[in-house]
Length: 299
Image 1 (tube, rainbow, N blue to C red):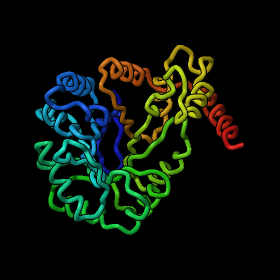
Image 2 (cartoon, one colour; image 1 turned 30 degrees about the vertical axis):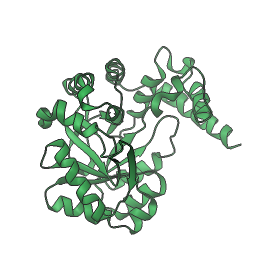
Image 3 (cartoon, one colour; image 1 turned 90 degrees about the vertical axis):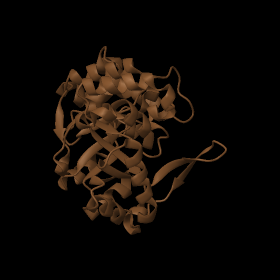
Image 4 (cartoon, rainbow, N blue to C red; image 1 turned 180 degrees about the horizontal axis):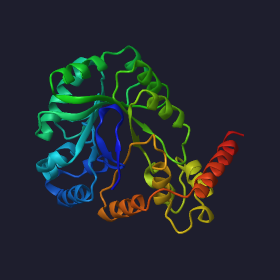
């Protein structure tokens, strides 16, 4: 496993991180397979795990199965967007990024994780106005001053991410970036200028291009994937492996969080990442094809 400095946090994080969204839908009492997966990830050298208060049982599962190994990994979670279970059992999502709202959420995450301090706390997909005019940042700073969190962050894309970079007080940025959506490279470059840590979500675009046929929601990406990552470009690599290796060729990327509940999928991802960077020739051909399909889609 290779490690990269997460910007000004100075944390040395594994280039392959673990995204804990998928595991959150498994109740803790049924989570033994999740426990084996989480422990295998740590054994393999993964030391960055990303979750959220919104991912149902994710934080509880992490505490239950690898809480005793807290000194082996850095933990990032999120606040502002979270789910609460109603008396009738229904889960309802709420969105509130105010300092008043996130304070009890941070305390709740600390309680669920059975810890005194969380490494990175992120505002979870706030809108532009929440970042530009809200007081969520002040809430994060208050929690930091109280020793509840080490670093301040957010998960955001586009103009919201650029506004956060302009503000200059967020230590890391989590954003969507992959071989099929390369436009955020400009946002990443701006964040790099501020020495922000770069955490990539959606690094393999949920592998929707691996389905036998596209559906209405993913048809464009499905077809683009077959043009950009065609067999004559990537050889016998899977598109998932090619996607991950392409992403990690970007030195401005510090960790790519990939989520799964399937330990064999994790092993495949690990093996692919360990095979290292793609050739310059392959990178050039991927770029050429990306530019071509982007032009075709805008005609």
